[in-house]
Length: 68
Image (cartoon, rainbow, N blue to C red; front, top):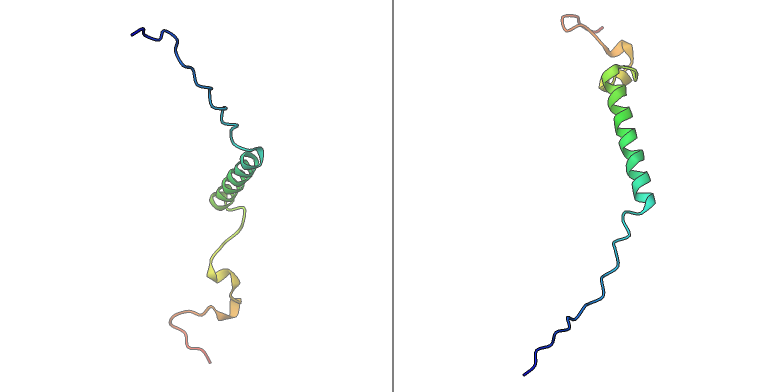
C-alpha cells in the first residue's frame, strides 16, 4: 500500500485582535485616578478625613468636663 507523502495543512486560525481600545483607555484612567487618590491621601493635600470632620466643633468636649 503506497504511503501518502503529502501532508494535510489546516488553515491557520485568525489572530486574536487584542484588547479593545476602550478597555485600554478605561484601564489607564482607572490607574491614574487610583494613583491620584493615593498621592492626595499620603501628602495631606485633601485635608483631614474621618468622622470628626463632619461634626460641629461644639460637640467636642473634654472627657473630665460635664455638659450643662
